[in-house]
Length: 256
Image (cartoon, rainbow, N blue to C red; front, side, top):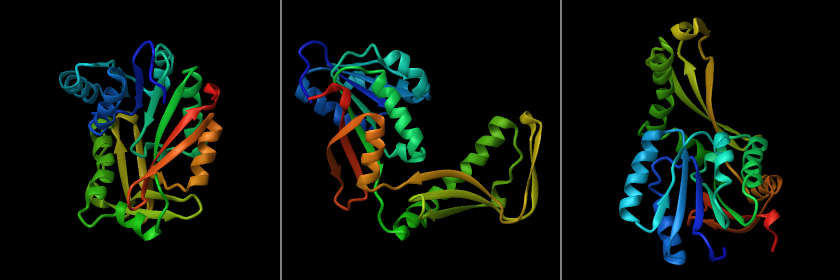
C-alpha cells in the first residue's frame, strides 16, 4: 500500500461499532503515514460518538469522520474520501451474508471508490464441525443469551409478548452451506402477540426461528467472493490456530 503524497490515507470501516480493535490498526497507519483519516460507518450513533471521542483524544494526528448510517447509505458519501484508501470489513461480519449479497456489497463499495482502494476482509475459517458447534453453544451460555435477546428486543420494540424461557437456543452445523445456523426452538405449542404489528404468531412444539447464519470459509470460497466483487487478494493472515483470517485485497480497477 503506497504512501499518500497528498492527503492522508483514508481508512473506511463498515460496521465499526466502538472501533476498539481497529485502534491497533489505526496506530500502525499513523506510524507509517504520519497522519490519517478514519471514517467509521455504523447504525449506532452512541457507539460512533464514543469511538470518535476516544480516538480524537488519543490520536491527535488522526482525523475522525463518523457516519451514522447503513452501508448502502454511506456509498454516496464515502466517494469524497480521496485515494489511497483502505476499506475494513473485519470481525467476520461478512459471514452473516449469503455470498452473492456479500460480493454485491463489496462491489458497490469498490465502485463508489475509484482509484487506489484496498480491502481488509475478516473471515472465520472452516475447521471441525464440533469446534463450530461448541463455539456457538458454549457452556457458559453466552451465545444462548445473545440469541434469546432477540426476543427481548422484539418485546421492547414491537410490543411482543414472547416468554423467553419458553424458547431454547439451538446451534446447528449446515454442512452443505458450510455455516453455523442459530435457532430459537419453541418448547411447546404457543401463540405470541406482537401488538405494534397487529399480529399473532403460532408456534408448534419444536418449531424454530432461524435467527442467524455464520459462514465458515476455505480459501477458494474467499477467492470467489472477492473476485466477484472486483478485488484481487494480495495476502492472507491467519491466527495461530487457523480459525480466523484477514485477507488483504486490492481493487482490480486500480491495476498494478
